[in-house]
Image (cartoon, rainbow, N blue to C red):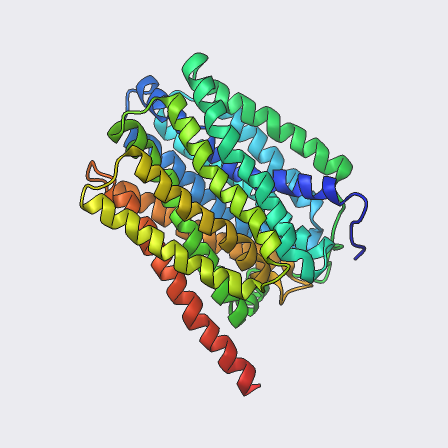
Amino acid sequence: MPKPKRNSFFVILILGLLSAIGPFSIDMYLPGFPDIARSMSTTIAKVTLSLSSFFIGISVGQFIYGPLLDRFGRKNPLYIGLSIYVIASACCIFVRDVESLIVLRFFQAIGGCAGMVASRALVRDLFDVSENAKVFSLLMLVIGVSPIIAPTLGGTISSTVGWRYIFAVLTTITAFILIAVHFALPEGRQPNKDLSLKPAPIIAGFWAVAREPRFYTYALTGAIASAGLYAYIAGSPYVFMELFHVTERQYGWIFAIIAMGLIGSSQLNSVLLRTYKSEQIIRVALFLQVATGLALLIGTLLGLLGLFSTIFLIFLFLCCQGCVFPNSSALSLAPFAHNAGTASALMGGIQMCIGALTSASVGWLSNQTAVPMSGVMAACAVSALTILLLGRKIIRYQAVAS
């Protein structure tokens, strides 16, 4: 497969936009939760279920697209997925009850996750393995723009013309991404016509990926660490707008400021990769994330944290995540050249399944405090570090045994 050179900037930009569809779809409508709840005569907790259904849709969809991307190539499944997203987003504009919104958000996720799976597979297709971690860091730069622009834009739209226009903007943006995919994105690895789409071979393909120690170690580490981010996303509207009484627009700015930590650290990761290995960076980042998560939880339990100290600790927590994601993604996909679509789908599916559970658990544990959010964030960091340390022992043992 030829490697992009002169057009690398545009390729990475499009891959970043595809990866950002999911985060943008989440971040942009978060400030509209109170407005959505009022317009549908329901509660914010019920509206939050549309976030959980979105996570479930992404989880399910990625397992579908993985084999399709390996069987039919990268772009044809992308066309189908992005078209589903555009239609579902357009329907969200006219929805009248929260139950319909929950269902439509599921189908919106089913369509949008095609971009997330395909973008990771195309990184493996189009760039050398040694460059993958750096490319994922660059993707984080594009993805990171989402939590800076999206909540601020969503808060402004919701407070001025209403939350329904948020979905009109999402529909328009994704339509333009679909056009860019068609005209400017390379095909990537060619279709594998020998790949069967029957259930048994598909399951066997996923199992072949899942039993690779390097995959399950780094995929689970990255997924559980990322789940702390999803816990923050699910809990932050209530914590900031209900407990700290910030406005929708102020919440958008807070979300954007915190997201700058994610962007900055992901770019710092590119610099660190010149000197250190991905394995070294991810280990240190997780130790720091555990310390920050525990400080956030203990401070919340003891009532020591105010608005600004809470923002600061969450900022630090996401700084660590900016170094965990690109390295865990690159290390997870490194062993797979011919079935990168399946590996990408399994990695993303695991991430979103855990993300859906953690985001839902924040709602289930709701007790009118910030403890559910901070507790789940801390638990995710501790669990991710534990899995990394145990998994590294298994990888070393396998290397010695072979």
